[in-house]
Image (cartoon, rainbow, N blue to C red; front, side, top):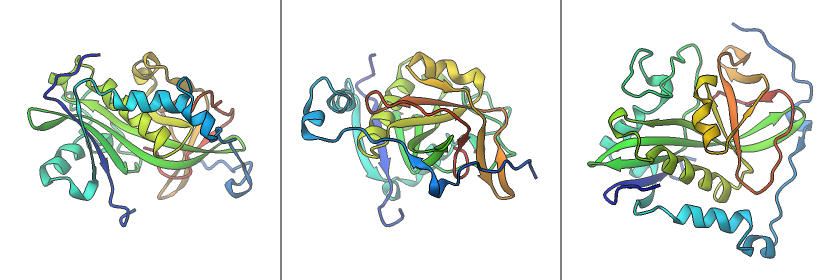
Length: 247
């Protein structure tokens, strides 16, 4: 994948100091649910050049001419803040075709804001965005820490250059190494899953429940897609409880 040398890929990290629907009963309360087994963390495992950790570090470093910057969200300029805000899918106008795909009419839900942002900049402006947040969800009776991926969008005139792929690769590497979670998880319409499946993601065929101001509700019209980020982690079976608002 070739990326223009004048393109910047930014990972925005927050300041640590800033760090009526049918309700379905939870079969196993989250506080009593078992945790997904953790991946090995022995030095030999992490230093294995063929293991997931070293492969992820190599992929994270291989930006193919893209300048990668890490900074606190509070350090973003007002212009960068405004530009990244336009990529938040629940703020987009339902009929706005300029930011398709992934510009979803989601006004009936309250959505979680990303904590981190990966952005591709060209011509001194943000042209691609992928948001990241950390969440512990429950799948069946298993608690699973995930890196939520949200608002994967490229401006229409900048598509076909591999920018969304680059942003998503950077985001999933961040999820694996910095958040140390076994899966990246995105919520999208079923018609939009092809993009993720083309990159190795899988669809979780299960109902999705989430928290809203009025209580716990089933998320309609959306599916979950996941990517194992730490080796051969296996996705559990069962209903997905996001443990908070969707993203």
